[in-house]
Length: 360
Image 1 (spheres, rainbow, N blue to C red):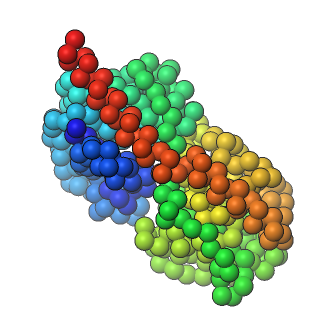
Image 2: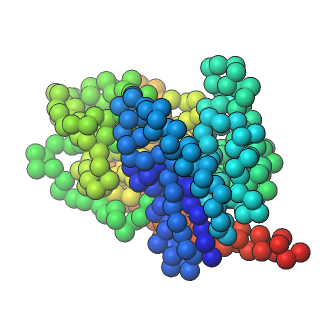
């Protein structure tokens, strides 16, 4: 059975790596022949983060995707949409013929269109993702917010598949830092740092200074540097787990917007897999992942963040207990070892549905 996986990015894109690529060993073990083609390569992603996108690179990527949409397989696993910023009337022209398509969503990409600041974009693309969902044999949603949208769009079949981590790669670390200082930690990209975390950074820096701690920021800048109680370290796939392990408390601030309600809480899952207690904004799926007082705290106001940070900073035993509870929750729900075999069964069931249709 052939599975053709059409991702948005290569392995440098977290959504593509986590939502599809990490499942390939489980698909192979289940006897599925999986092949991956990415829309945008590493060069495009680097240009995007640097704020300088190339029209030539974009055009080549889209033409390559149009070609790949015509290839044969038993099932196509598509990340989000095939042709970003193209209306459905065009994407539909390249939609696979007589091949079931499973579309996968780990954020509320539909709000990039239906809540765009330009009314023309809303008019042209506001209903596009609804149409993609409706045309799909199945929609995989990373959380309930996304699943509700798929049901509303008229999707044929909807399954909730959370974003997960390979728990065998994530291990708890003890005696973390040679200098003995507590690390309050955040991990992300330059975009998520400037968009979601920068405004709250002063709160963390203040607590770090008061408690004799450091604020470790991973992925916001390409080169390492230190400024007072804040230290910036570059991200890489090879180093991210060890960098999270060097933290003592994992942080996920997030403004409450319709788009952010569709996020899947990946930072929290990473932190918890490393046995860290977490503090997060009470937005979307964060409310389900974080159990206040059990594996972390939810904080909205500056006072709430201050109280949560100082409480954990001053109580190593509480950090240990919450970290263990978080790790256990990841092992039970947000683990690749749990969801990998399930994903293989889902794809096989979609392909069998196609066989039944062709035989009737």
